[in-house]
Image (cartoon, rainbow, N blue to C red; front, side, top):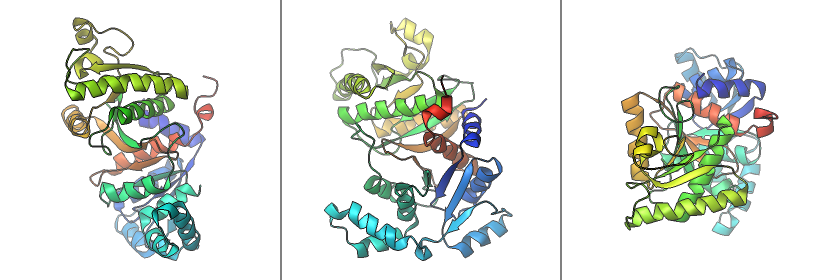
Length: 343
């Protein structure tokens, strides 16, 4: 069974509230309809109600079971403005400026998430990535013990490729252009934690480079080696169980035969299910190559390191992509004890 189908099954037992910042987009409405019909929870669509209803009529989408909220006319507008001003007081935020911001769908959605009026947030369908990410990074606190917010893309080949049942977690594919060793370590630990939460499998983390346990002193390779050691230490401190190896080339991380030829041993060799790229260039290029060449499903970007679940989807995302990201962040909002019981 594909990962997303498994996650939807878990949401059917523990449904959640999803706030969609782009409520008048037809792909979002189609995804919201799926949330209702597949009993995943309650979709909350933000935007002008008349526009949302007009789009729904045009695409013959039933809005039954969905909540429609116009931020500019919401009873929560003033309370959210005051809360945002308090959160950003050290940055000079006034209530007047906050009131202007929370009229925007992305800020209103983030305030709903912060105020526990929604369990997970999906944005980005009609906005540039920076517009979707900025309120999240300004308002939602980082997880305890984490200093870096980043993102991951989940590639699912439905059993046809490497990874855990054909599922690979790739990071950071969206946020940090050139992470430091310390930031890479945070990315590795937070991505491993999400991977374990969603699959209940041991995270086998490959810290990717153009060398495998080599002697190169190139700064990018040195950074990966340092990040590997830092990630091991942080995982121990946070009580996160994972295996990690680096520096390691992607073929030695994913192909057992290549790992054996190159003399790579251990849990990660040829069996990695989490790939941590050294920078955004390689992550963006590598993840898109996999999707196009292998015809694999890609779900994300899933924001990691924050204390509340959120996804920043691409403006080119399909309704299928959106429902996949929704299932992922919905299950992030489910306590692990409910996901797996005594397993």
